[in-house]
Image 1: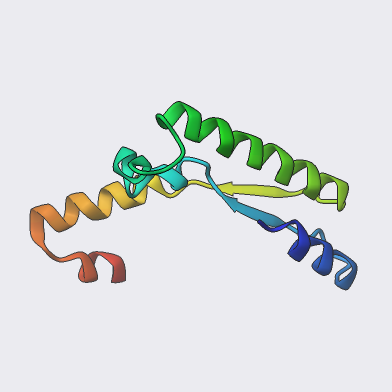
Image 2: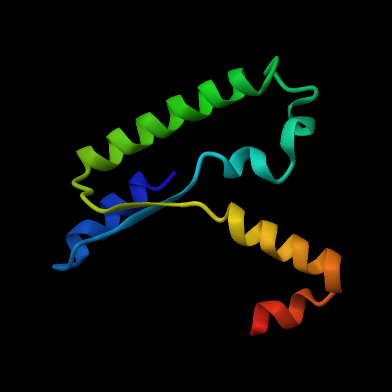
Length: 98
């Protein structure tokens, strides 16, 4: 996901290079279980087993590339707040600009 980009960046700076990854739940949050229909996954547990394996490998690759600052972004809560605002007022654009 980002290990190659990190490996490119690290030698270009004297500062601490940071890598970021989306939180694993992002892969499921927006579409939910309906995204698994017709996929090779029998359920969300099988899906997340693969997601976990991918994240473990990516984090190991980042560590091997010298990454010591990894941020895993979770943005589920703001998305829920935006959805709630949209439902209650229909003014998402104004809320995002404030």
